[in-house]
Image (tube, rainbow over all chains, first blue to last red; front, side, top):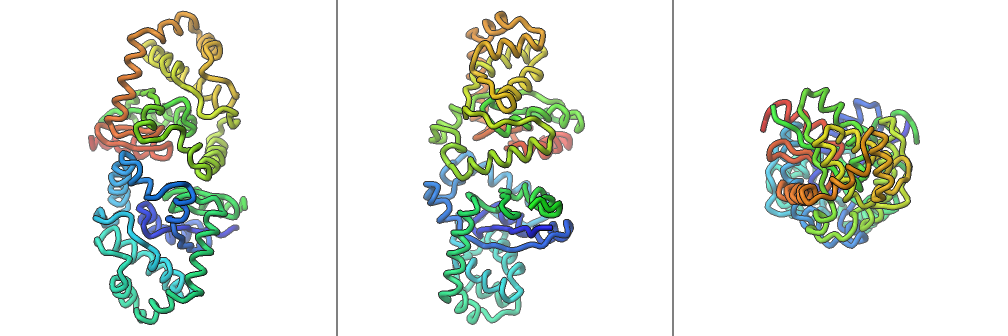
Length: 199
Length: 199
């Protein structure tokens, strides 16, 4: 049995329902899950996109917001269309890397997605992230300092490079060895692939 | 209970597995299905795309071909990556409109997708389409002449315009009243939506 790597970006809309359910779905499949924050900005830029495809292609964007509304309703998740899209997830991603080392990463990830897509918070704001950290029993100031250390900055940069090398072009994505699955709606396919140990 | 409209384009890769299973899935949901051929070219052009997004965005294109290979394998469908992509589906779409009036439309649609994505045939070629028609017991010459009548040409043009007005930006898509679902992987959601008569 292979691991499933879950690649997500905090600005990514479909990453919200994916992040909220991925731990449960992995457990149901008996699969080990690896959380992989990365930045979509550089990945879009390499494809010649200077903004989210949902902003570049208006009709697609309109569809996405309606689709997300249906999906979150079906999943029982609160949803409010953010006034700012896409948000800058750089600092939140760095904090996540600290959290993944210290064991509170997945809880932090879920709290950031809810802040962005249910509460209308500005997730690039240090005080917003600090509040979320305090809510998880962490020392906000200590974590935010650690999150901007050269080690963490380099780790996020390396992980974003790795995403591109693995063939990613959007989020959420899942990898099982060399096998790539794109989209919240491919989560089950990725889990099944890992469970059946193709990789 | 509302109808499900199935919007497809013969050049569209994910429309292949969708077209092969849509009748069965509609029947399983007890939903009435309406087949809606349209042209993606004008729809892409309105979005500023001069080629398939799978050619414009290389990394996404690489992923799509691998994903299609997995999906057709899972569905038990023959698949061979066409050397020509995207193919011109204009004439085949016009023939489909004739077939939908005469009752052999769905069979013709499935035969064209198999010609394109399993047999490596050039589906813009009149003789290829004529052979497919003969295989369905039709008079190829008669149908091809009917397919280029002003009435059929206008009908396809109008349907492509309608697709854009309904918010479509890609294929396959499904509509249930004003509700839009995009992608082979949203087929079940569209069927359920229609069955539960939201629309």
